[in-house]
Amino acid sequence: MDDSSFEAMASEIEGLLGIDRTRHERYSFVTRAVRGYGDRPDATGAVSYPIYQSATFAHPRLHESTGFAYGRCGNPTVLELENTIAMLEGGLKALAFCSGMAAISCIIKLFKQGDVVLVSDDLYGGTHRLFQDVYAARYGIEFRPVDFTDLEAVESACSGPIAAFFVETPTNPMMKVSDIAALAELAHAQDALLIVDNTFLTCYFQRPLDLGADLVVYSGTKYLCGHNDCICGFVVIRDDKLLERVFMDYMSEGDALGPFDAWLMLRSLKTLPLRLDAQEERAKKICAFLKTHPNVTRVLYVGDPDHPDYELSCKQTTGFGAMISFDVDSVERAEQVLEKTKLITFAESLGGAESLITYPAVQTHGSVPEEKRLALGLTDKLLRLSVGLEDADDLIADLEQALS
Image (cartoon, rainbow, N blue to C red):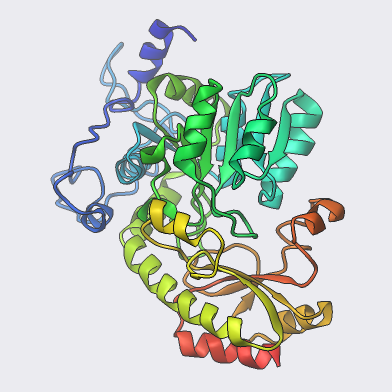
């Protein structure tokens, strides 16, 4: 798409490129999350941003527009959400998708047959499946796994042209932490993009764009939503040329988030800092409990001072989140925990108000070959806990009885 055609397309959605990054700079993150990006949109004075539940928008006359034309290409409620996410993340623009996987899929369309993308060696299983079974098998993009915590290994993996680094940090579920600034330097030396999946920490605890990343992706279903009631995803874009390319696919394929879900997300963002602070507080207590339990053999939590990447986390983040992975002493014990927890729910997903426990070997990483899982330390004894907002002592009591 040439510049003139993109400008014509962008003019259909007023404000698509008009994000003012300095707007609300005098306010803290907490205040910006509560108030959102935009002003009250109409004369009613509604404090809650309205849901514009419309598939299409009328034109005043030929060659004139209200700034909106068709819901697949832009909606006022969705735009307010996108602008709020971009403001909180420090990006040029955010795009809201119907799922996190849709957001990642859109980003991978930046690449072509023969391109090489370095990826975290213990990616979330759904991302691994999308990369290997769809884009590698059908479209000839190579996804080369690498341990991004080992900068020498990253340099060694950069044999020949590299199109991008796709980094989860912390990784899911092994909780490895990568040095984003160092990876940005390495990627850009290769003329490669740095893409960071920031789902576990969100822009409240970690801002990859400030550290040199080019794109940030999210499963907004998780902490950004925080209520286990809305599936969505985001891409946050740093550069206007990247926006041109990503928006073309976003608009053409129809993966945009709907207005009601956008309104749910706007509601959720208002409490994001409060929720994450409270969940982290509970996670630290639960981590301390698990480390002393005789039937627990390993605890992986980035907020644990014994975590190998703890100092790096302290350097590049303002918080540690509330995701804990832990090994128990037998496969039978793992199955027992899943069956016996009463307050903690055995279910996929994470980041919500309700605490959830999952079995990565079968659930989130069931599509990853067993040999690869085991090599990464992702065994049949590993459990992943998303700490919610219940009382910490109640959660600990539930784990105690399930582990015994």
